[in-house]
Length: 128
Image (tube, rainbow, N blue to C red; front, side, top):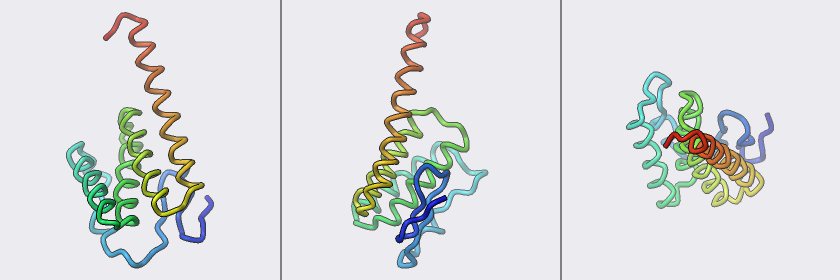
């Protein structure tokens, strides 16, 4: 585990750390492991989008990373996990943590390729 000066862990880990104590909303938006319904994850993802649009980037990152972790934990389709990595990367980029943004985007690209391969194998078998 490596942590930068902002307290953010490398995205290859299964959960990011947040170094700022300026944000009071991280705990309020936490999703318990037992409540990972698609609706709750969609709501938390949308909340992350609102935080991002308001410039509350650490809150946005927290929301998107919780969604990513939950999707990985419940073994959601790789396209959903890839979309979460993309959202995490966008927040990291806006926070100017470019190295970690690149890593998050690379994770997303890898998962998008995986999804394409799965679709290609399915269509090769005559399954739509």
